[in-house]
Length: 297
Image (cartoon, rainbow, N blue to C red; front, top):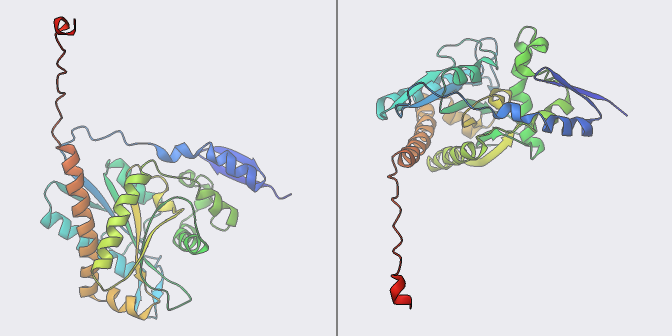
């Protein structure tokens, strides 16, 4: 029977694929660590916006008209500007602000080092079937369909452009060329899964409201860029560059502004709900009045 080896945080799980699954399950808590927290928490919402791909990694292409890396950067910058101009107590950080190549592990690392509260990775989708259309927002979790797995494989393939990625401890020995590796990797689930799911739902709701790009819903898959984030985090596939309708929106500045505004509205709603929880007044306990024991006789 074929043997599988998976290195995870310096440890090796060895055996059949099924045995490796259970071995990795014992180690998934590695991805669920929490940040130490800011020295002074002043209520500021720190958001890291990750423009997918960049530099020598162009991402997917839309009929020769535009590259994914161009769309993601434009949307990231537009989104960041909206957040800084329109919302109080928000700090925006970018994994890139120009057309440069950033390794996958460096993206969540920036968020972790700055004790970010939210991580948003922006991408565009592609499919051999040009009829496939719509946005999808992913959180870290199980591949529930071949389609989800295909999206993760395509986005994770950026690792192969990195020098000596095989020996980079930040990837725990992940092999992008191994089908079993992708399956095993999908078992890792972030400690902030519930909050990530709630934010992802908001993104999809607001994109659908634009009437420009339909929503394909919230999904789960194993993305390297979400693997080690220590905060609620999502990966947004804005639409399919291979679909004429989606591409017509995403390749223009006006269209990019529309989808940026949709994500902005999701963040605004998320922040309002977060602030309401933080500032919710404490409920004082009501004292229980005890009956006079004399009346009971």
